[in-house]
Amino acid sequence: MTNTETRRICFFGTYEKNYLRNRTLIEGLRCSGWQVFECHVPLWEKERNKTGKYLNLPSLIVQAFQLIIAYIKLIFKYIFKIGKYDIMIVGYIGHLDIPLAWLLTRLSRRPLVFSPLISLYDTLVCDRSSFREGSLMSLFLRWLDRWACARSDLVLLDTNAHINYFSDTFNLNKHKLARVFVGAIEPDISSYQPNWGHLKGRKFRIVSIGKFTPLHGLPYMLEAAQQLNHLSEISFHFIGSGQLVNQIIKKAQSLALTNVHFPGWISYNLIPNYINHAHVCLGIFGMSNKSSRVIPGKVFEALSMGKAVITGDSPAMRELLIDGENVILCPRGDPKTLAKKILQLYQDHDVLQKVARGGYQVFYQKTTPEKIGITASQALEKLLIKSPII
Picture 1 (cartoon, rainbow, N blue to C red):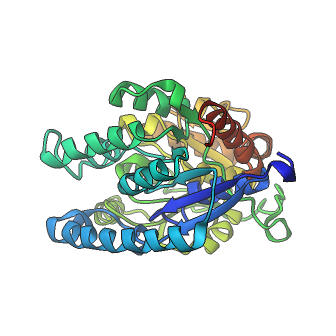
Picture 2: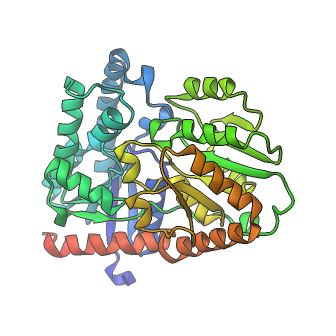
């Protein structure tokens, strides 16, 4: 896209500004020559643990009032700060922003693009069991997923496995669904340039970063840690918190683990430091159907810093990665095999380096912000051809 062809994007809503999906998409589009103007009001980032009390009735009522206030602020920003644009994109978490976005884009006669990342129904009902299947809330979430996507002119999803799920579950035309990997923001190479030998001889550190939810499969990781508990040179660091935090800590105590650490939540800017000191980064090992459809952001972040990744085998992972070349894939829900894979990398530094280097190459070949921007741009350009601006 040349300067004379530069087009404007209104990135709209109450999306989580620091969430990886939104950051890589915005940066990638800017790298591809788009002008991206953010019409944003913070809402969902106020609470990192969106489970438990966050989803009870009093909390939902408060959030509804906060959403109304956010709508009002968004309208004022939209009117007085954004001006003309070519495409509106609603980022993650944006399902409840779609009604307002749809109205504004119909009035301005501009295309509406949705980047949901997840299905709320799949996440809150099927994966986390926050709401019972068949309950009014589950029916509402299923309807909201479908309605938000159906009202959008284009939906950006992270894997083909997710595209198949959205198409089949919500009866959506695949022609309006496009795959754009999540990717990761490239680390500051002056501080974190990969050096695959700098950790040799140090205590072997395994790191997992993410929410303590069923998707990640932390109980299986703890059981793998138990099988390696006799090796004092191997330590596990589970960074994060969330829905299952009490259950996970109790399980670690019941297993009498001496090789496990729980630093809790950390700020986004500290994540590279934790990854930098890891020999191996763990992905997801949960047994829910959702875990077969996603490549989590923490996998991309580990690849971007040249770390060997062990993660659960799934159709989604195989869309990007090859077992034994740039990742170590392990059957999900299988702690014995996971422990064996970790031990293999601990004992064979050459394999560790091979997988780490291979993953690093895949990241820079396919999932940097620049690559994400190119993929997203291709989908947006097709949309403009189909829906010319009047």
